[in-house]
Length: 392
Image: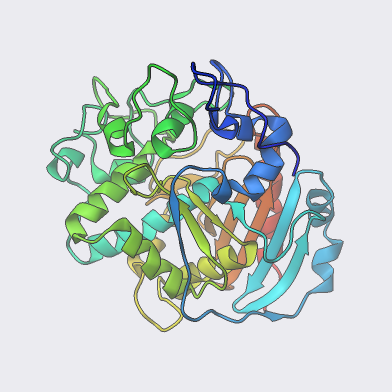
């Protein structure tokens, strides 16, 4: 443990009760758990820090056979990334075979790590099934499914929400501790409200997002984590099934071995945009769903093959440099060959369906913003190199 949970920076007026210092954030600052000097321990234990959540476990898991390829160890990209102090884990699969696996000294195959925005990929599976089953029309506007939603999303099409192609007043600049994405942490149970701030639910927070118009005409990705929460709300409404049950379906379809943790707001609604914690091996098991065209380990449909394939047609908005060859479509990133997603602070999931390759990389960036485009670019290049190896 890198810091003491018994320390307190804030005390209630009567002097008897202390605020939970892990979740406290002074004005203009990150929460204590999220400050650079504390972040590594926190990313490895976030499921024990957040205020609300649940865990799920599959009744049967997919066994993985280790057959390590020695040439991967010789890749400069692998050596450089696994040699950094930020490194936590690297797991690469070819089907159900582990072709490479390595962990940092303070991490292991049974250790849990936040996957942050890689969590968003599960919404791709849920929405894909809903579209295929005729429950969601992606051309319809959000207010047609959620009449109570505010102006920030009301007139946006579901497809634009999927593609991160919406304009509103929700900001996601992690160099600013007061960016909307971090202020949402209060509604998510990741930050304590200030003394005069009401603690709203996540969906109350979403209703407060405003905009004079939602159309994004730049052609560039306008990334907003709140989009995922909007999609989850729609999925729950049209399926008349709780999001918790949807996540249980995915956990069982993936054949996860160890517990899957999801943080929630105070009402128990999952934080779909980044609330998942799991092991590197289990994230790799989950990634195999995309190599099976959305099928679970028992052949059950948990995603849409057509919806997955449409991602690689590169019809969505694209990212600015240095990621100008990447597109965002149907809530996944792609270069036309692979599909995947990153997680804030240093995680990445890359899947190459044709070779049944899944690469999972966990790291924890300890700079102030927990962001580094060069680091992300190097992870993608390494994963592409691994996925390009000949078949076993």
